[in-house]
Image 1: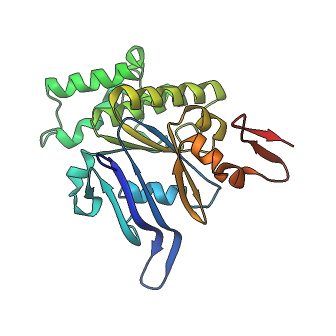
Image 2: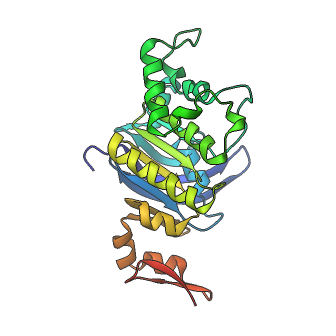
Image 3: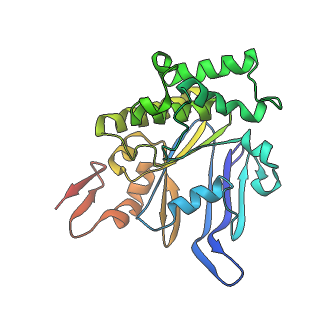
Length: 259
């Protein structure tokens, strides 16, 4: 794909040490352009988190390559990667004494001087990121004093402040109630479209993913199937993934139905 921000080429993911090599998934091929929200879905234990960590350069592939903006991530130095990939993890272990604004300001670390001080330009970037996620009123509140949804927004704003073309999110709706899940996914979709970001997230919230994602990556033991909801529905991939004794996938309605 010309202009692809992210490409997987014959990618094998898993774990390896001096004695053992365990392949979690293999022969993964896919590519994505900018400006789209992509949801990575699949059964528990199939390797979604491993794939996310490999794409984010937290662990090396066993074989094959991950390309970001046409260059293998293995060829980037860490600072260059931090200017191209933002990562939002589902974790709450932020220092309690940091404010929302200070957390978002950490996104400027790849660009700051030795002392880590923010220039006027850096502060403008932080201010814009805070406004984009709707946290202006909470910018001076301690990060441990805001709700789970507001904390997630702060972490997304931090990634936006990095000004990277690609953002990975691991289960960003995991600790949210249903209305907050919808709002979070709509926010991510809007940011992808309006800011021209490629946003890739893993999720178990399938109905919400079906409603909001521009693209789906369905990871199974048989490999990775990529496409729009319509494409994966018509090909039978979604039905093959979901159909069970308890539910089935209604292809015409594009939704899951209990038996």
